[in-house]
Length: 225
Image 1 (cartoon, rainbow, N blue to C red):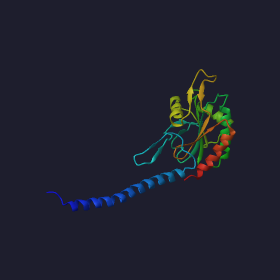
Image 2 (cartoon, rainbow, N blue to C red; image 1 turned 90 degrees about the vertical axis):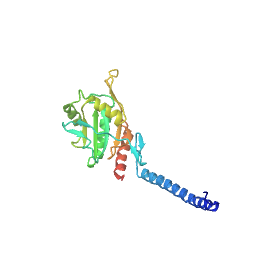
Image 3 (cartoon, helix red, strand yellow; image 1 turned 135 degrees about the horizontal axis):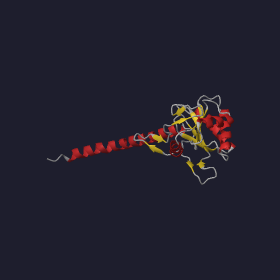
Image 4 (cartoon, one colour; image 1 turned 135 degrees about the vertical axis):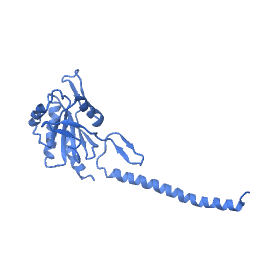
C-alpha cells in the first residue's frame, strides 16, 4: 500500500527545512575548531621545531626529547627527572676538540651567567667522545669554563645512546669519523628545549649574535603559558 502523495511531500518539506540548519551547525563547528586551534598556536611565543602529527582528537602532537640517562661530571645520573619542569639549552662537544668546541663552550658560559639566578634553567653539554671524556675529564673541562653545579651538566655515557639522542631527539649530527682531523663530527647547534621537552630554537653556538638571541628567547619562553 503506497503512502499518499501529499504525505510524502510533507516529509520531504520537513527534511528540506532541516538541511540548512544542519549545514549551518556543521560549518559553525568547523570554524570553531579552526579558531580554537589558531588560538592555541598563538599562545606559542616561539615556534616548535621538528616533525609533528595530528592525534585522533585533532590535537597537535609535537616532537619531544625522549627519556635518557647519562652521567655528569660529578658522577651523578642525569635523566628526564633532572629536566622535569625546566627550560634548558643542549649541545654536543668533546673535551679534546680544538676547533669549534672552545668557542661554543665559551658562549654557553655567557648563557649560564645570564641565567645563573634562574632556578628553572639548565645547560646540558653532551660529549661525542665518551671513551675519553670520563667524569673526571669532564670535571676538569667544566672547571675551565666556570660551570656551576646543578646548573651546567657535562654528560657522558654509552656512545650509541648519545649518538642516537643527538640524531633522533635533538635532530643534529654527532658521530665518530676517523677521516676528520680530530676524529669526530658534531653539530655547532645549541638547542633550546622547553618544559614539555620540545625543541623551541636552534642557534649557531659559535656566533655571539645567535647566542644573544638564545638568551633573549629563554626570557620569552619563561613568559609562555
